[in-house]
Structures are given as structure tokens and as C-alpha cells.
Image 1 (tube, rainbow, N blue to C red):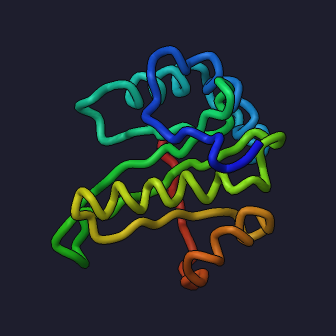
Image 2 (image 1 turned 30 degrees about the horizontal axis):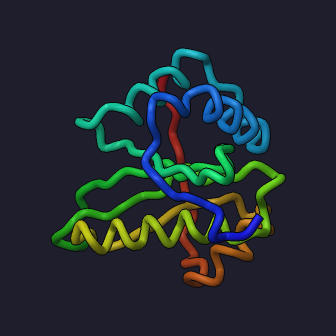
Image 3 (image 1 turned 120 degrees about the horizontal axis):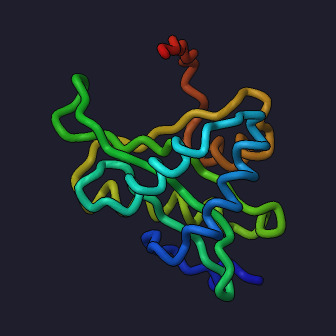
Length: 151
């Protein structure tokens, strides 16, 4: 399959089963176990036009190959919103074909079209495969994330 065969589009309600399958693979990759109600809530927000959480999907020959979940937020460092790519994942069978790049390029185009200032994301230091792609966009910026969990 070529990159040209990938269709990048907004998620629709019909994507739920395929997305849940990919989401499960994504959580397994990161060794995370989320309660079903969190996954259900995420899906609801993805489809809710009033939510800032959105998802673009890559479809190849009718198969959901991957997704990019993102949202925008205000910033104190620039006048217009930033776009945060929170989750990017491709089914292993579709990796290495330019589809991850197509999903990121799609978010770059959306960000520019909407007048957002920046697109940014995080990944694990050890995620060397993804970092090979990410490093073609920008160098790692040296930030270290701290996360406090409540409840």
C-alpha cells in the first residue's frame, strides 16, 4: 500500500469498533490499563463537536490504519492557541509507509489554517521508532514532563 492510498479524515461514529481495537493496541504499547468508562468518555468527546478533543484517522483500503487525537488550548506564550497532539498510533502492519507523517502533516495544515501558533507532542525517550519520524520535524527540545495524579 502506498501513502497515496491513505485517506486522512475526521473520525465518524462508524469508526468506533476499529478505533477501540487500535486504542487497545496503543494502551498495550504504553503498558497502560484504562477503565472502560475513560475510553468511552474519550470516544464521546472525539465525536462531540463542542469538545476540543478531536481525532483524525488514516484509512487505507477501508481499514482504519491509525489515528491522531489532538486538541487546542490557549497559551501564555503566544496570542493564538497551540495544538497538542496527545495520541498518535498506527497499526504495526501500516508502519513505515509514511502514514504517521501524513497524520502529522495533516495536523500541521489544520493548525496553520486555523491560525494556531504551534503543534507539539511528547513521546517516551525509549520510543526510538517514533522519534526517528519526530526528529525530522524538529529537534527534541529538552523539556522533561512532570505529572501529578489525583484521584
